[in-house]
Image (cartoon, rainbow, N blue to C red; front, side, top):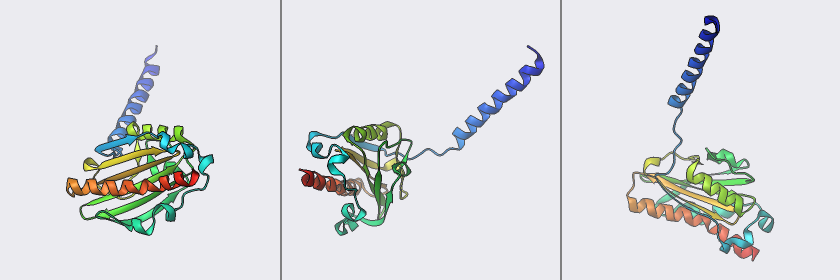
Length: 196
């Protein structure tokens, strides 16, 4: 092989390696919770195991009622609706998802968020929970320190809920806030009763 062919090939390989190394070095690590608990769907949610059995889309008003403006030591900051569920996710995709609703909350020394995803069926919901467990997570809608954060992820029929809280508040305050955010998932039980 001639020296004229080897030198450009080696140069190209070095440029590619440098580009990949630079991208890995410059890219920010996406935040994930420090403590994480996940649950698959169960027989309790069989009546809403598919979107066909529970066709009406969720609304912001249905999920984030006036009672949800203050939870534990958190106050509602903002709500958002995503028609493309992947806009609320990072590092994972929600196949068959038609909507995601998110509320962000602030409190002294902490912040958090609750997100609910409307998927096609329980199998897709379980797949999203599995993806959130290892490949990616929800995007932060409000900044807080993920290194001290806690999250609860649940598949419930064809829905997935994600409650995530973090900050410098006491461990007890963070747990209380997480439990309160997770309580917003009761909207799914209302759907179970309506479908039954």
